[in-house]
Image (tube, rainbow, N blue to C red; front, top):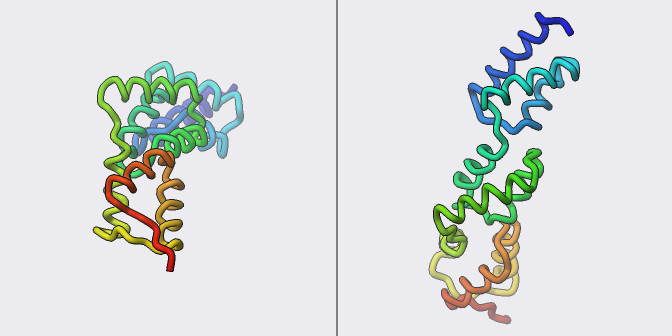
Length: 158
C-alpha cells in the first residue's frame, strides 16, 4: 500500500466529514470513487478510531432532525438505505424514545393543517390524496385515522 496515497485518502475523508456527517457506507462510497479498496478500508479504520464516523450517532441525529416532517417508518427506511445497520437504528430510536416521547400525531396534525387547513369534508379523491401523502411520509394508518377522527375529517361522496 502506497503511504502517500493513504495519507491523501485520509485527508480527503477528513475534508468530506468536515462539511457534513456521513455514514460509514456513504464515506466508503465516496472514497471508492478515487482510491483502491485496501486504502479505503484503512482510511475507514482511521476515521472510525477517532470517532469521526459513528453510524449510531448519525442515526440519532437524523431521527431528531427529521421526526417533525416524517414518520419513524420512513426514517428507518432512509437510514437503512444510507447503510446504517438496523440494530443501530433500533437502538438509536429506543434511546430517543427514552429521552422524549415522540409525538407523530402532532406532526400529522401540522401536515394536515398545511395541506387542507380547517377543511373537514373531503371528496374521495382529496381524502385519498391526503392519506397517501401521509402514508408516504411513513406515518402508520392507526395514527392517521386517529387524527382524522379527532379533527372530524370525513370523506363525502358526491
